[in-house]
Length: 349
Image (cartoon, rainbow, N blue to C red; front, side, top):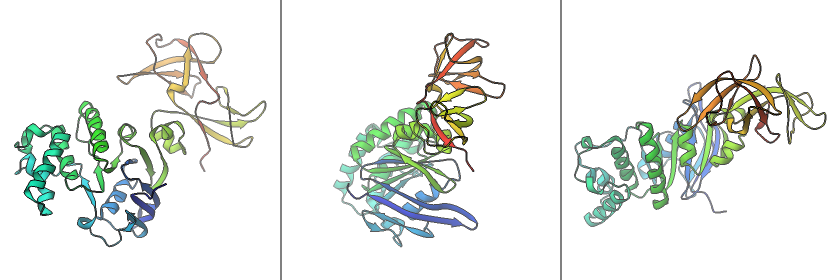
């Protein structure tokens, strides 16, 4: 395995009594699209600022291309940053905004024109080079900011909530463009976001952070299907949490208040309290036959799909995956949860 482009080893950072980073370690490969995902206050922005050089870790080591970043100021790091606000210059046209960093480096006029032209073509902004920033749409401004950040050919590009100012439809369209540009340039991207859908759509790997620590690092599908902790299961995608007690008569079973749920595998001992995380689409629903009895209580419309809310006991309502309109509120249904559906977690202390 080749050496990583960026390596973070045991990074710790506190602001007074608040620990923003608590022994964080991760790596980013060359040409990788990496996401730092987590709720506000989890430490992802602090980590990004440490990588950029705007903050200094209290302890730990950061290396880029094998070189220690300690003491290296931001402007001497082969790292660039695209801010959430875009920070574009309103008095300059699109061409000059993109060319700004290259002019500061003192590059030749011909080289600047060639590089800016290449990036305007790549970001579909070639017809807008002479326009002022206030004449552009939000999506166009976002692409200008991206082109400007890429112009000096950084080894690593940091993106701070880059799509947060866009509406949903434009955000989804821009995700495809952003991923395509990253593939074409083969620049390593690190995106900071609290939006799970954005991270899942864009990243090759995702680090989920919580309270200054990394809970799990994995590719999107693995993160969704095999969350390492209850927090990751609840933060990444829709899920149901069902609590119960492990029994081992005739194979492992989670005994819940509404059913005995057989498990294909279970490392927990007999009598252990545990929580099963089950994705809505892993619960099968039918009108008849064997299964867990329930009553349709409501619908949750999500645009491209609809969830059923099915009450299976006085205390528990399960969200059941996309359905085709066959069921109405009040219908009696049967649910099936297969032995391999879901992930079982030990009760948290």
